Amino acid sequence: MAVDLESLSEATSGALGSLLSTTILYPLDTCKTKYQAEVQTHGQRKYRSLSDVLWEAVSTGRVLSLYQGLGTKNLQSFIAQFIYFYGYSYFKRLYLEKSNCKSIGTKANLILAAAAGACTAIVTQPLDTASSRMQTSAFGKSKGLWKTLSEGTLSDAFDGLGISLLLTSNPSIQFTVFDQLKQRLLKQKLKEAEHGSSPVVLSAFTAFLLGAVSKSIATILTYPAIRCKVMIQAADPDDDDNDKTKRAQQKPRKTVLDVVRTIWKREGISGFFKGLEAQITKTVLSSALLLMIKEKISATAWVLILALQRYLFLTRGRLKNA
Image (cartoon, rainbow, N blue to C red):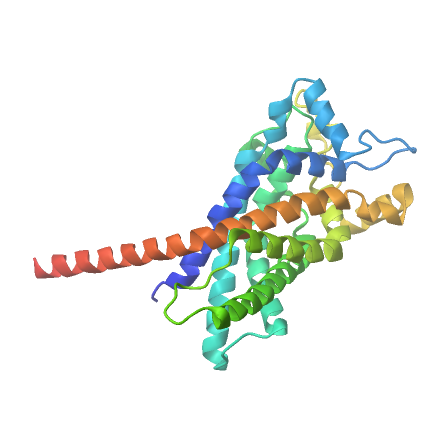
């Protein structure tokens, strides 16, 4: 079966955009994740705001620990975005071919995006779980990828998979809103453009704004599930490398119901939205940067893939003639 070059171009540009945005915003992501993972106990909490997490790293001389788990997070983000953008682009093309439609409606877009998201979640869940545990470990005590995953069973590596599948609605909403707004803007620009002008594309600033708006909407709608997922995957605050007794004991698995009960009892309904501002700040910036970078990379990626295809075609022809 021939490779879908357009989908490959979308996947490559999306994965590279994710890699860059994840690296740039990783310290903020670490602070945000540690803040979300903490649950109030007897009216006391270690972190009262996001700045408390940052101050802990600075005051203890462990600023570099804000990058703990970066390699795993980048690997997870790269693979996830590649699979997502390839699947999303491929499913859209397949839908248009089978339905003989000229465009995709909002409902179909949501279904296609959710299907791509589900495939992504299943493949990358162990990496997602490992990166969350690394980020929520005490500063300076984060373990490597293999050690983090090998401490538990195979099922432990898939902690939070059910809620991750539920959260496929987040990128579904985000990219559907982005695509719809993008198409409307491009159609408007195409009408205004003169005949024979260069291809119409979004400016970096416009892509940034569209990304910010689309991700804000998706984040607000799905945030309670996002916080529950972080708490399920978070490292045990009492973990200690030298405590062999705790490591030998089988820890009870966290479930969605357990986490919901804990939040409700200790923090009330507002607890389900603890860290919402931090989540919006991080995810909006991350997604906006991702889509902005992707829009700029996609054209170059498409040209390079076409050039590579032409090179392979010519090389194959020379070998046949030799």
